[in-house]
Length: 420
Image 1 (cartoon, rainbow, N blue to C red):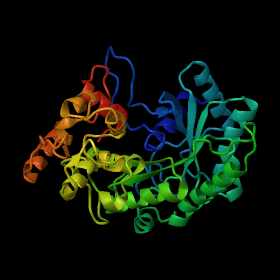
Image 2: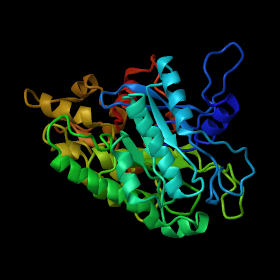
Image 3: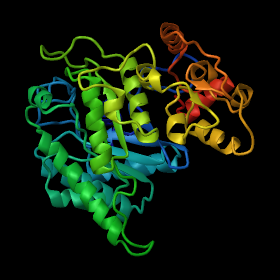
Image 4: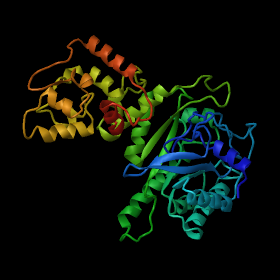
């Protein structure tokens, strides 16, 4: 069994990878309190039906042959080193699972000795879990760049999800900050898995056939360690969704855990990360393209969310009439989300809708009223400067935090549905 000291090193070393949905919290326990989010080891992910599940998150080893400047586990870093064997990790997973601490595993590793050696150890771990211990829980495996293609394919048959982090948004920044990696070394396995999954899904026969990456792929980009704009980052994300059917692109705001002359000295800040996630949501669920959200050299505005920013740039398209506008246009109205748009479509088949009806549907009218009419009536402001000020003030009042059980109905709907 892994001793407490090695476990601490391997879980702490894994906490900067956000590809499993949550990590990096600094909320430590206080005297008399319960729980501690600042200790590495447990992260959370979500099932298709919305359940939040806990994952054991650790590295197989934090000994690395690479020297990526932004990485706390880089070869030249003066940090405690540790490794675990596949058998030790299997025993730990089963021990935690039986105690109901976790429902699954997020397993990664620094590149120890060589890419193939490390990938073989990772595969050995997941095969032992599946075949020897008959573990049927969720497994997310972070792949190793430059590993043999056959190893990549084999791993995908035993895990639910794999991720290869693209790390930095451009090849130039990758060469500068991670010279031992290349754009192709990161894109090749992503492309390979996307192709093999497509072929497998087309050829599989019956429900008892072997599964191949049922939860797909994710990737992660560090935001702020290099000078790329939000527009460049969003175009790269759009390409991942379109070409590789990526499930999620995660954005990690840069934190200066490593000091180097080529790296910024300050944190990027969570607001920029938050705006990128909002823009990502618009691309995945609202039909927006990266070109519409931000120009190639543009950053997203901090004053208000990307949907409001788009609407303010395109005021010639507004206001739209709630009782006749098509779905595509309703989805582009600030304050009307997916659920709200479909409620409007359904309700207006039976009667004409007014502002009071939208209130009952919990449409965010303090945003939407500037961009809509109901039966020809307009209750917003016609002065674009006033609209900008009101939207900026509203955004300033927002708190980007976990949904409370006692949140107001308006904030609850927005947080649950991602309504922008």
